[in-house]
Length: 195
Image (cartoon, rainbow, N blue to C red):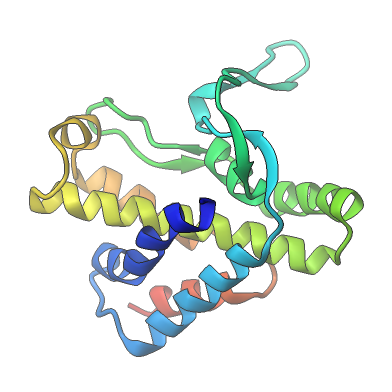
């Protein structure tokens, strides 16, 4: 079910990225995005929370410890996707809102090390899977933002996001942020950076 829910978004990922970067959805970009999708989908599914977004993460003022709240929906998904979603702030409903991510190369490596210990597998594979999910989340956001800008989005999404230049520019920055040393997500970023 997780794969079926992601497939329609994955099908439009290259088009969303091309729109965001005022580029053409070339065959080269489509093939690179396909490799990202395959990498993301090759990760193991695990049971865990499904309501993953930045407003469900609370940071303690005293020791900066993270806590996840709102565990009402539990099901199977990819751990890398959960982390990337929790780390992405979309500032819904904020005029002039911007996209931000708390993901860094260090946090991606640290989380991947934990995955390698829990689920086995090599560190590099887990890093690339998490990075692929982070890029896909950005591509999904680009697809949704494109729908807002063309009037094809729901009224709720249009009001919540708006297609301001600030939002568009900030999403470009999030997507181009390098999280790993290599892998298919970096191939996409290199193609987009050339535009």
